[in-house]
Image (cartoon, rainbow over all chains, first blue to last red; front, top):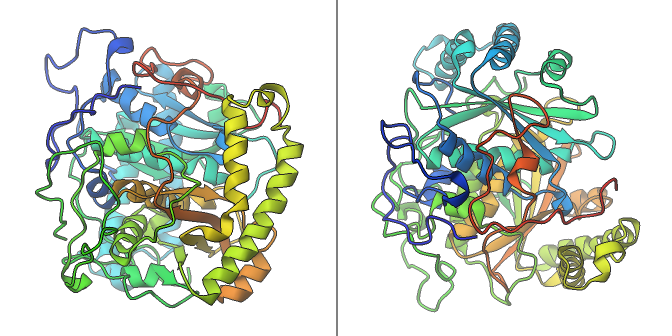
Length: 267
Length: 267
């Protein structure tokens, strides 16, 4: 495969979305087109891809979807079985119905989670806290769910009974998808908003009974931007030689910002 | 966070492993060091990261492990709970014991799988077929398992009963890890060679009972190299608007090579 970035331009801090400007849609046939050149470095992309939940009112053009989904399908899977399938919805009646079904469900699930996980208690009473900011972003995103430019269901074609490790053959593809979106100026988020409406979604989209819905992903041009992500300090997540003991090299780069975010410990 | 690649050099086809040459180990304290600059583009990395099962007899130095594991921990997880933990083993008695335990188990599992999945039948009788080449690479890798430079166990700290979708909070970190290795001139592979010896491994490494082993990863300097991966054609994996119908833009880039690999259909 000759990829378009074999002789790529210098890595920069990124660019605007690929193919979204007037006149940028090539008249060439896709069969003859390489992938777009890279403007974001690999390590940079891995450390600065945020969960993007809010989008500008702009579509993701076909040539961008092609590159993003191609990269997703290059992910590894057990024995290279490639049991993942990605169902992409943009416009039209069926897409609108799917967005409505998942949006309604997402508002129900998020309402229950916000209460159950006490997002508005503890540090969440400080509106500037990471917890409160996550809760606000989640609230806005589920309210506007029907307006997401692209809705993608990551599916798993099972060949055996469900296991807790079967995700090893679908979530690497999902992560590739989110990183590829970042590479082209887009952004997305991995959610479980399909939980509870799987039968309705399968009926709507013609997904066979034996296929599992593994993730609901939304995608678009970020309303905000990508950048360094907040996580726990590395020495809480990485151990050396045995459990619980961080190795001496588990040291965050200068300027790393931290959060434990999410629900309170123990929830 | 100020990352070292904010003003990165041009993307090239890659480079030798970071920090592996004589004199390349910096005397600076890691706390003051940014991540290494990027030499591989993001989209390029996503589409050319192979499963690397055979390694040169060379270590992965601390500054490379630091960058690789940092990138792994920047992955997304449900509610940003960050329930993943990565236990990294390199040298010493405990590492040797873990490698021996997993190696012995891998040879047992692979022997059963090679027979059960008929890797040596059908197209596997042609030694040049993707199936036979995968089988050969697997055979060699399990034979030499004890020599892997780095062994990493990806763990999941559960907060609820096991579910088929819990992997959404650990396998993105695993994929980031493998991609970050690629970024720095290393390579690795995601395996399930811990299956069946979890109790022995947990006892050896002090991993609590309630923590799940999600993946066994090996890492090192590739004996071969990275490059375009073989998968099914994109239009078999990506659907538009509904199940089973590829969208018109699901077109592989020129020169893409394909395989269904793995075990025969239906296994």
